[in-house]
Image 1 (cartoon, rainbow, N blue to C red):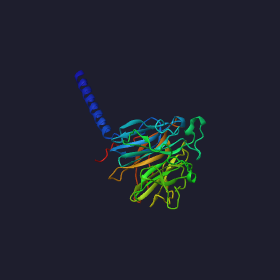
Image 2: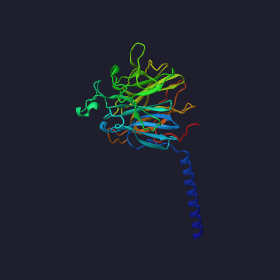
Image 3: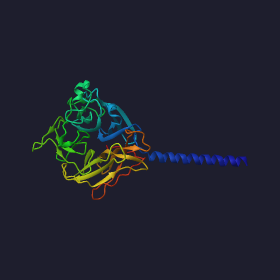
Image 4: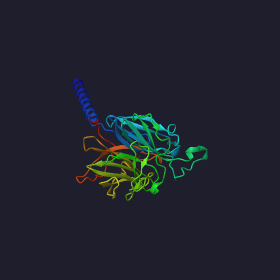
Amino acid sequence: MKNSILLLTMAALMACGQTKEKQNEQTAEAETSGNPISEEWYADPEVAILDGKYWIFPTYSARYEDQVFLDAFSSDDLVNWTKHKRVIDTTTVKWVNKAMWAPSIIEKDGNYYLFFAGNDIQNESGPMYDASLGDKNKQGGIGVCVAKNPEGPYVDLLGRPLIQEFYNGAQPIDQYVFKALDGKYYIVYGGWGHCNIGQISDDFTHLIPFEDGDMVKEITPEGYVEGPTFFIRDGKYYFMWSEGGWGNSTYKVAYAIADSPFGPFERLATVLEQDPDIATGAGHHSVMNIPGTDDWYIIYHRRPIPNQDRDHRVVCIDRMYFNEDGTIKPIKMTFEGVEKRHLPN
């Protein structure tokens, strides 16, 4: 009897082991990024494919006075991410004192240009700081750094803001730089409910005035608050932005489509918003396409539940799909994130 029990026990243990082995194999096969990709507090993520890897450049989510640097994350497979600390900071960008926000990166001719906003400038005279800060009391807006590698080291390209003026009432923050179908480079930016587009020089050192003399054109759609991003699909320009309040659950993403980067852009729908079962305050995102495919991803920040603080925001990644007519399907936030994926050779 004892031998029978022993044999049954051994068989059960072997079966259990085989089951666990199968479960482990299934888990390995179904390995995903998980959301968030890091438990650390970050926001406003910019995604890009650079030098054969996936890269994310986010804002460090903290009080403005503590936002004196930018970190970056890289991955070979969308699942395992490596953190690159302080790719730029205020020791490099000497005119910035706080509020280093919303990086945007673009590669050209082997150089990597990293745009950012600094100092939470409130008017064209500069941020309202203590006079003891000297030049840092006078400047703020959108700046640009350059490096030979995505992880840096970066140097300040201009030593001053690229854009400090309040054109059309738009606070100079939340910039996105892209190459349009006409071969020209454009910068889209703006807070305080206004969005501008300007043509930027090939060396990214200045804006090129339009034929009528305007430095930028306003392209603000209905509902726009901040956080613009663009992408091109099937010859169409998709303009996406954030609505609501960045510090609460009303934050969300809407979009429009046009034949030109200048619009007109008519709001079509909300595509990303809070899910009380997962997170709130989903917004300020960017979009990535896998080269040679029609596979798209959205990288965004959201507020975990329970939320610990005004600045408790984390970076997440999910799939983005389209309808047959080219409109974007509502995006489902997940805890699983996305499956492992290597870039094509």
